[in-house]
Amino acid sequence: MQGLYLVTPDWDDTAALLARTEAALGAGVALLQYRHKTAGPELRREQATALLALCRRHGVPFIVNDHVELALELDADGVHVGGTDISVAQARDSVGPGKIVGASCYGDLQLAVDAERAGASYVAFGGFYPSRVKRYAVTTPPSIVDDARAAVRVPCVVIGGMTPENAAPLVARGAHMVAAISSVYGAPDVAAAAVAFGQLFGRR
Image 1 (spheres, helix red, strand yellow):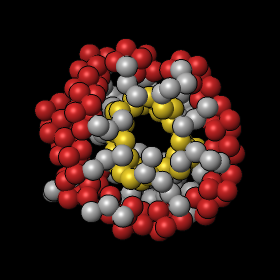
Image 2 (cartoon, rainbow, N blue to C red):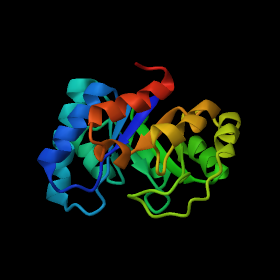
Image 3 (cartoon, rainbow, N blue to C red):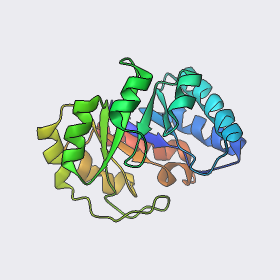
Image 4 (tube, rainbow, N blue to C red):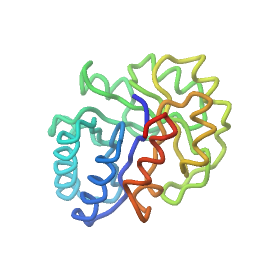
């Protein structure tokens, strides 16, 4: 796992969501997470099904935020859980050993250590910078990336207001993936934005 970790915005316009996602996938994405906090069950299933098909076409792993049942129904590649969702251990038990389980660890290294022990495939830290999408305290220090590299063996993801410019120092510290929403989906040129993130990892 290395590169751009693309997370979908809360868009009800499925056609726009798919068009911009496909543009990014074609330019290079390491992992796609479907996240729509306000969607109802029918829209969520419709969008997740269509996004999974895009990911299969482009060879990109597809995971679902929060909704383990939906991930199982679609045979997605995994799930991502946060602090108010089911536990990492419960998610791992539900999806089995062959799927991806991601864990939000905010600015807490111990959460990352515990998540790895419980079966997490990667740990995500943040927010590092103010976000246009998520509301949280921007209190995660860059040094946590160094600490995580020493404390856990699973890949480290950085999140929160990421741009290619402000993510660069975190990648230099050893972050394996950079999670982004607005910097890609809100960019004038989605493909160029995805490429710019990929270049942080030596991709052209």
